Length: 374
Image (cartoon, rainbow, N blue to C red; front, side, top):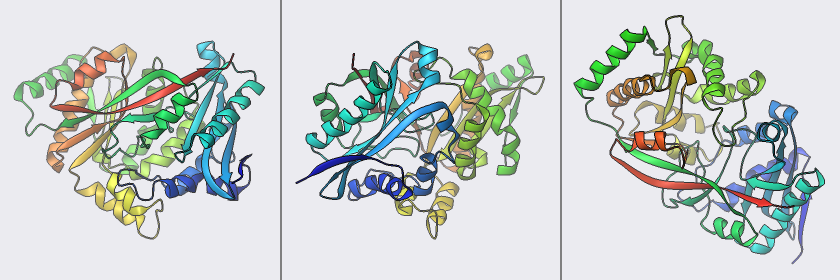
């Protein structure tokens, strides 16, 4: 059987690249498919402004004309400059359980890295921290959030067989929502707001959120600046992600804190879980996918905690606790019973210890691998 690999450029090949995981995971009850149209846009240099800031290539592995694997390579120039390193990002790796295929995919991405002057390769990482990242290594019988990843257990073996070692892990928690917020917590909230003259902004519509969207993401740039693999994003890239996600948010599950001058100093973005709805949508918004998504937004039992950010000047001032208490009130009102966090770097002890104050289960772990080539 003939195994080949080729770089993709034509729209038809990009479509094959996007559709391969749908074939690979079609009988898996835990995989949550993305919206195909969103994936196509992400891989289109004319539509995703991230391509202006990177050097990249994407490949399909085929055996006798059938797709059996895919991989991408991204050289993020700003990331390398910030971190004084020469690393290529391996991205969107998907593969059948066959080390011959995996070896060919890895070797191709590694050669691309070497040809472009890189000294190593790591990942999976994406265009940004809001893109696909990491390989699932624990939690294979858990439903991921729409902002997380799912992979088969054999992926870990394929990476390690091909010389990749752990660089860092993200861990995820499942948290029990309180049936009632203690009066003490509510009093502390009011004290914090009064002490610093803070205002909590709530939203009732997407139109109300839109004027805050860039402000929130500008704060994300500041709040996340020290996190692993994070690179501040220019406005056009931020707008790309805003346009991608804002229409699926339930405005009630978004909270913003403003200081006395009306500046955004903190935010929390949650979302009624869309995982089961996305499985029913099968990668398509129309004709029925949108109906499943809208239905899931109305009466959720599980919510996904997507992003939380507090300006560095306001950390340790109680703003994070304020945001969480405000959001919990909304979750209680809507009947939410459990919250799924997205990944937190395993060394971020402050964030991890905070969630351990709640009834919780640490049920998923994702990994970024690295391999030095020189």
